[in-house]
Image 1 (cartoon, rainbow, N blue to C red):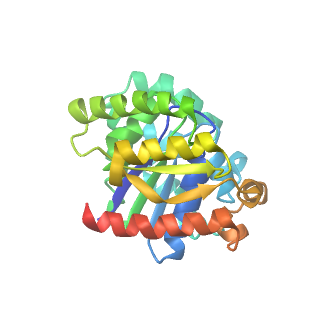
Image 2: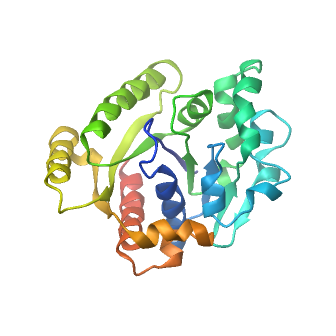
Length: 256
């Protein structure tokens, strides 16, 4: 049975999609069966997986509004060797369409049930807002992976996100918990980043993943080639960090 995880943070530009795509590819490289769900209307995880978002016949939008089952809308990412439920601009209209539908916050959860036996991991890349789309992701998941930069504003946003997760846990999804915090875009030369990192470790303890993803040019270049960073340049420091993170995730799942 698949373990389902949201990669979420209400703050934009913190590496959610980079983490989603590279974790999916790194888990697949470790022999895991992976489905990546792109829940962001920008479709960046779709493009980063080597899929042309303009040429999609069916997408996550069709699944959410009941026009197609997930098994028909998913596609294979040759670049990352995982399955993808892709997204494009159609998804921007889903917010309005979902409001009128029954079980609107559970549409993704219901769709995933049909394919959950096909995978070891299902990863959901959430948009950078607390929207009905993000709520669908949180209601579907066993846990949340929070990528974050070690900066002051990121700490502010983190407290909001933790409160949101607590509310969803209390009212909509009793399975939901924080799996861990992943430090990304980390620059050890900056004293402030070291201080925030130490604060996270002292406050969240073993909820903070040991793997730390550094700022890395090769990771940033990979999406323009339609490849996950761990495939584009496996030897790069950023790619090595995500491979270590995937190994840590596999170990952590066994203890949940």
